[in-house]
Amino acid sequence: MQNVRGITTFIRIVQTGNFSRAARELGITPQAASIQVKQLEEWTGVRLFNRSTRRISLTEEGKSFYETCVAAIGAIDEEVERMRDSSQEVVGTVRLAAPVGMGSRFVAPALGRFLEQYPRVTVDLLVQNRIPDIVGEGIDLGILPHPLPHTNLVARRVVTSPFVLVASPAYLQRHGRPLSIDDLARHRRIDLRSWITNTVRPWRLRRGDEVVVSDGRASLVTNDGDTLIEAMLSGAGIGLITAYRVAPYLRSGRLETVLDGMVEGELSWSIYMQQRKHVPQKIRVLSDYIYHVLSTHPDLQQRVGRD
Image (cartoon, rainbow, N blue to C red):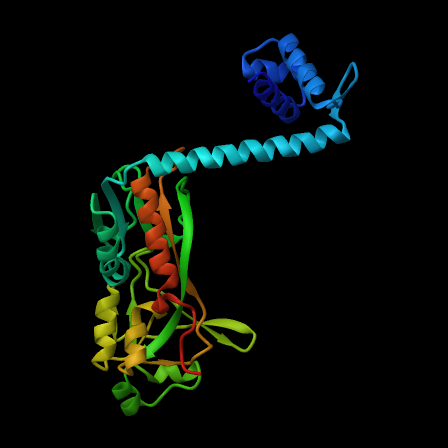
């Protein structure tokens, strides 16, 4: 036990660079700190510090011993955290907020397997197209766009999906497939008003080495991604949307991408949580599970369009 106290004092002296400051933080006298280090040197059989009237520095043996001590303390802390987690029963309610497209399409279908594994957990799933007040509304986890400005939340980026231009085969048969940015002026345009910014999402396209914004009068503007998809399926025109939202329709052939490789921009999502010193086990396991579901889902991968 005496050596453990000495190691703790030794580490703090190295980190503060000062016997007196380390002693103050540990609640002991500088004389006691000096005695503990001397006893540690007697135990190890080496001199740990070079001392002068103005400063201290580690000897070569002291540097090696410090690195070993820090690694050992870190391993102990990790093991204690593991044991604490394993002793905690996974039980209680977790409030999870997600946008409509992400919540209904990816999160809700995956919860059955999670609840089978953790039957004493209740998931309060809030599906809404708005940025919630995570702290004020008592939300434990939020799937939200990345990055959020001016936030102290802990973010774990999980997926990034590019934007694509999409239309139905019937529309393209009637009006032709656009082969250039200029061709878009002759097509009906469907715009999506972002619930994140409350502005119409611009069409940014690459022409050679420059990125241009394709302007034009929209035939239809909507603030809902599912409504945009239904409009495109009906042949209403060409729309800009994130690839993950239309992945099943692209696979089935009910929708097709146009101007592949020319559309710029992407949308990233992160799992956010409140800052906590010790995250409750019920929140940790759900966060890890949702991260796995989203990061491995084939529709949320980058590759889109026609080769």
